[in-house]
Length: 193
Image (tube, rainbow, N blue to C red; front, side, top):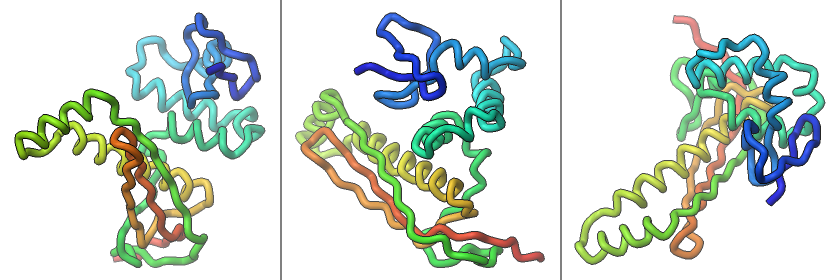
């Protein structure tokens, strides 16, 4: 499937290199990536590089011109957990915080293909009567990614956290797991001690 750079619209060909994947159809081409990498030391660790790259992109005029879904892709791909100080809770309150506003119910989904080897591993575990560690890891990953996406949605709405979170898992065929979560996006104020 052909990818397009979200900044310049340039198609990315199969033999191109140096671009950054964002989704099946979208990426940042090598020339745009180079433009946003200006000022980042060449010997920076991967996490530091991504953090600085994310900062450079978010503070650029180009970022504000992007459609919302492309900004979500960037936030999900480059935004580290330190960038999202979103608080999550399955209850209707957060200890130590006062809810100052309700921004509505939000949701997020994550679909994960488990692959042939996971199915083979689970078949062996089923025969032996044990746990399939491969599937357990995949389920955990799907839930964590869905919750991370929920944080991104909350941050874009101007929320500080999500309360009343529910996580649901569905299996489509034997090889696809869908984790979906929803909750109420809220604004918060820390209660002084």
